[in-house]
Image (cartoon, rainbow, N blue to C red; front, side, top):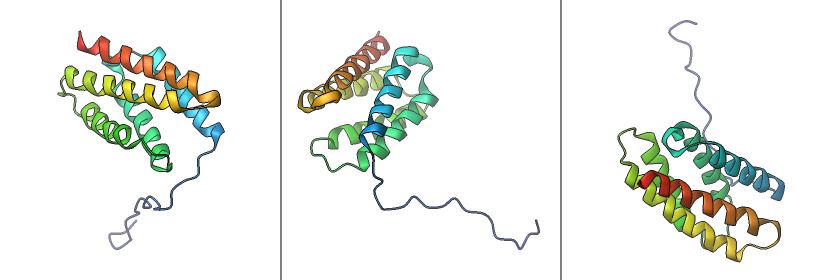
Length: 133
């Protein structure tokens, strides 16, 4: 490649919201539950960031009301996990708040989502509790 060749650029993220099917929502929820069940909060930073990015993309695509706080806290959690010097207590607080907000969403969710979202809420609270010790 010579010095005058154009540098390849990463394509910009499209502004059009992606469509997310129930099957994709269920798969993401299952993946997140598996991740939280299998890993400890102390060593989950890099994979946790990947999960957060996946959730942020899905939540950005929804027009469902009541998710603004979850979206905001996911962004804060991502920032905290990106910095190895972030205090565990700060991460624990965000996880606990996300757990509480997820419980609210679970109460309103119908059908097949209530149980898994309730489980997700409990796992987020558990992860927050284990970090705050």
